[in-house]
Image: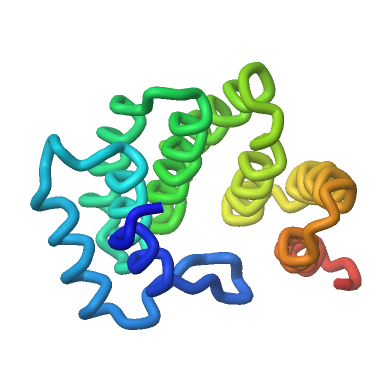
Length: 178
């Protein structure tokens, strides 16, 4: 990970609602714009990270443009899956759920066929999308699958993230949370 990409990641946190936000917006904005000024020389992973920074800053139209380019410039299935998930988020956060749905579905299909190690990541974001789309019963099923995968992986942070998302889905359907 480049220094700039790492710095951008360090300025983004995830709230209990599962959404990313900027911990130091002014610093993040400067870093993202510095990266984007590199233009076509900017490697795809850095371009994608700049797009994620724009999501955390709430600049969704710019994030959508940058992440669409990151999808187009992906050189591997893993890069494309990650960029698609982030592009889905760039649509979901401001409420463009109809635009987000096919992007997440493409990411899931690509992960299932070419990079199964990313299936849990794609389904986690899709599950959050389903909560936002007021389909929490379906979100429960999707997130239960994610939890099974992540428990097999044994990563406590990933497990906790999915448990938080499951709690949100359960709350949306009026069930007891964990």
